[in-house]
Length: 192
Image 1 (tube, rainbow, N blue to C red):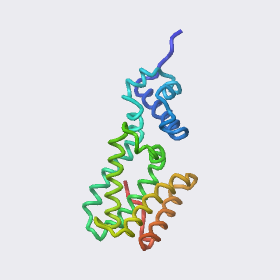
Image 2 (image 1 turned 135 degrees about the vertical axis):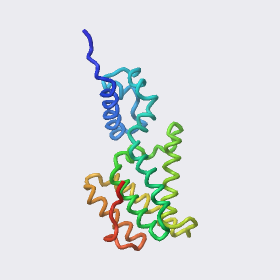
Image 3 (image 1 turned 180 degrees about the vertical axis):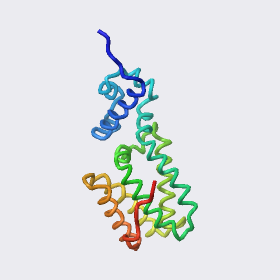
Image 4 (image 1 turned 135 degrees about the horizontal axis):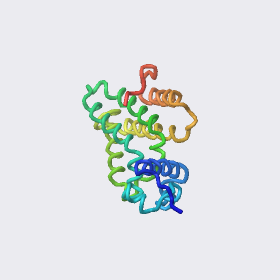
């Protein structure tokens, strides 16, 4: 009896669907390559043909997030200083709302050596965003506000998955308004 195998692109897509579900439910650390292969109905060798390892699968799943962040970095840096804070808030909200599933998969993985480049890029972006929010040499209170906003963005999107994108954006803009004394009605998500 021969087993019908899906075309290569279909298998790659199936591996990503299965990995996304497993990473989201039992976590990256709790998911093995063999589990992904078994649920994708392929051999581990076939899985490794498409992806060099588990970290490559995760990188593929968060690739759009990384691309959106990299595009926004240049746009923010090109803005006049007086417009950076509002736009940084808008970008932060848009990124978190659009990529909440990817961010949930990445949470708590910054200590893994295999994800070093991804974690370093995320740290660099977060530091740059804080600088856009409170300037390059902030006072301790301002730095604390920026960290509070950053963690509030992430925490809210992770603990309130039932909110629609519009509801989540509204909540996050309210948080930004309170922290940075900005009228939330003047804010809207950035186009990614």
